[in-house]
Length: 270
Image (tube, rainbow, N blue to C red):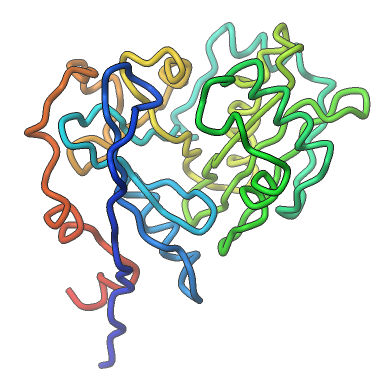
């Protein structure tokens, strides 16, 4: 019986730099190139192990003295909206959704810049120009869509979304900051949960949840939230002691982290 070999890319580590979520911390990332015929299966496989995609790279934090960043996803079948989320969905009943190919437009870029100027003016993406924005949207070797949201024929929100084998991965979302009463950030997540149900997918991947970070606090408000903690997906409610305190012993050496990863095809040789 013939078995295929696991698809294992070469991994690298970034130099430490200022953490965008927690003050006085340094972040470092473990990353690998996402390319070739097996890019789709690799994206799916590593997303289930806490990785995220940025263009043609897969990465996850591997900080020297902190393990606060936890990959988060909503289990669609377990999600029940709270009263506030129900109101948000009702308030946005006139918004229309459109899924398009990953192709950047001037309208998207203008919305993206308004969003950054209002919400992340000092962040690492604040100086992105139209060419860098186009690269973020268009440089993808995997199955990706731009989910656009319109109100009165005007683009008010968008999300770059990967379709992986068990869910939707929200790579990056942005919206019109002038429409605060619409709670568009929450609405886009709610609509992705609805879309995942329509597609019979189990999860919506939200990126990283960071205890102690005000930027990431909204994610804990979604019921059915799971986080990738100690090499397993766990219900957030089942790990009450998770915090942003420094805990370096929870961060294994990079070589050990890579050796413990599963890759497409690994099941066939075990």
